[in-house]
Length: 96
Image (cartoon, rainbow, N blue to C red; front, side):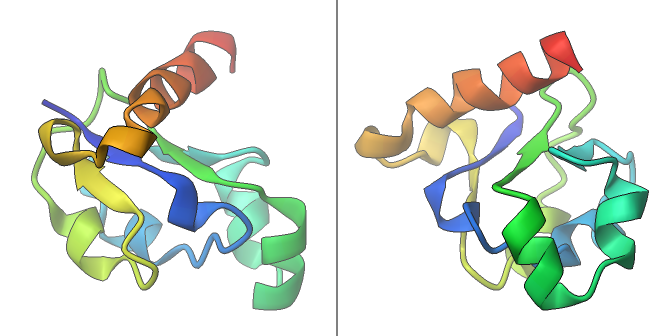
C-alpha cells in the first residue's frame, strides 16, 4: 500500500516530506523544485496540496513522520472521511 496525502495538507505544503522521500514520489500543483524555492507563505498560497504517486511510493513511511500537519497516512489507515484522497493522489499522476 502507498502512502496518501490528505486534507490537512491543503494550503500548508510545508515540503518537509519532499526532502525525505527516497524515491521522489511527492509532487505538487507546481513543479516541486519551483514550489520549494518559494518562501513558505507564498508556497502555501500557490500550492493547494502535495500528492504521492502510488505507483512510485515504496511505503517507507519517512514522509509521514516528517509531515508537520499530520496529513500523510498509509492508505489502509486513512480516516473514513478522507478515503477519497487515495483516488485524488493517484489521479494527479494520471494527468500530470
